[in-house]
Amino acid sequence: MAGNNELLNIMYPNPKALRPTKDGFGKGVEEISAINETVLVLGADITASVGLNHVRDRFPHRFFSFGIAEQNIASVAAGLALEGFLPVFSTYATFLTTRSLDQLRVSVAYNGLTVLLGGAHAGISVGPDGATHQALEDIAIMRSLPNTTVISPCDATQTEIAVKNAVKSTKGLIYIRFGREAVPDFTDEFQNFTVGKIQKIKDGSDVTIIATGHMVWESLKAAQMLEEQMISCEVLNCHTIKPIDKESIINSAQKTKLVVTVEEHQILGGLGSAICEILSQYCPCKTLMIGIDDSFGESGIPTELFRHFSIDAESIFIKIKQIVKP
Amino acid sequence: MIAQEQLSKLNGLALQIRKDILEMLFLAGSGHLGGSIGSADIFTALYFHLLRHNPLDPSWKDRDRVILSAGHLAPVLYATLARCGYFPIEEIKTLRKIGSRLQGHPSRLSGLPGVETSSGSLGQGLSIGVGMALAAKIRNQQHKIVTIHGDGELQEGQIWEAAMSAAHYELSNLIAIVDRNSLQIDGNTEDVLSLEPLKQKWQAFGWNVIQCNGNSIAEFIAAYRSIEPSLNMPSVIIANTTMGAGVAMIENDHRWHGKAPNKEEYLTFLNALQDRFDGSNAAI
Image (cartoon, rainbow over all chains, first blue to last red):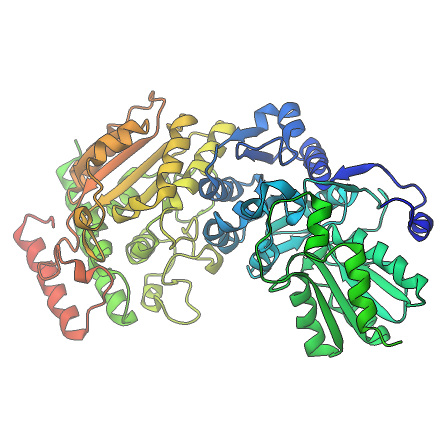
């Protein structure tokens, strides 16, 4: 990230240190626990890995360990929610959204219950653990469930805000995905964040880049490179994938006529699909979907993997440059 | 011991509920007959004798909670709830029809009074019960949480995850009932995937185990009442039942697990039920 951030420095005058987004999740849950005594945390044996160890230590009487048994935990959460508690269940996103999917669907969503789900280690950036631990299908899975909200914040600060904002404003299954890798924590703690409302990070006229999660930062860097080549980029942070912000997508697409989606997730069924569902119905235009192209992840360090799967800033820059008319 | 007069009344109610189930399934044209008929005595004993509940106030906070984990037994739950007065008995005729609150499997979203939770995907109800029992412990509430399971359902791994967690948290307010009719869709449970030694399995998971005849209302009531309040573990009642109990033509025939009677069968089964009842001192 070093050296090329003139534009980003203008937009974010106080860049903060690198922070994993899971820290924001832990902080957010700690804060809602402090003001809402119905919050209960259900442990799945990886409490520190998902950033919830501080909550456990501060509110030990509201932490319940259930071991490595995701299916049980999801339905236990439903039982607690039926009794008026707000359960928090977090484990690796890949296990959370596949191993306990039936339970999330029937016990939680089909009961119309509110449960906060933390999908940890989302994307390939979890790195060396390899494909089994890299959640690349979770957005597609979760956004297909009724009574469900899907949020993919772009940094630690936004993750914390998303937790607090979502439990205040949203009913139903709340799925928030986040990563383990320390990434630039660039958004403002006083940012305007509304569930379901896209944040416009940068105005532009030639191309709209709609990104989510860690890919927002990569897209901003790509946008800066594109601007240097006189390609004007509008960058949107689509932190809420369901419900999708139809209006902002259409408005921007009508202006630029070219929409690029970027996600650390399968192209099939993820952010790009959600955006194209809107565009194809209401504003057909040229689109490019950047993400994982129907393959499993693999071991490696995050920056290597971003490059390998062509979702780093440089790759995004090259792909967009190829399709923008000179 | 329950008084004879009271027992006769309960047996009469169980007969009525069986007739309701036959009618519901006949009108619906589909549904799960065998298990619903076979577990009618358990539901009658619970709702008309054992549970603390108030049909006029379905969300009364001190009520005992019933989780129908074996969601395909919806017909017996619906008929029982209606006979208790949770909703008009006429409504049972809408089972499985479009727009009905009586969905093929229970739906909390449908808003049917008395339905605590949606179910239908097997194996989830015990975990939901664990969550509810834990909630009651946290709040120091005294009500019980009763979960109802088919025996084939115990093949689901989640049941044993839940069993572990219930013992871990010493959920003495949790009572699981297993409708042990030894049949599932493909045949006998011991041929499909053996459950025995079932009692020892539950005991090894840290549960208090009671076995009884689930088609004897008196025996089932005695089994339920035998659970000591001072226990520091959850309890399971393995209620041995006959699938289709009371309708001779379908008893112990796994082909009637998920089938509805046609008109002729419906009338034949009704008569068979009444004959059994009349000829057996008013019990099935």
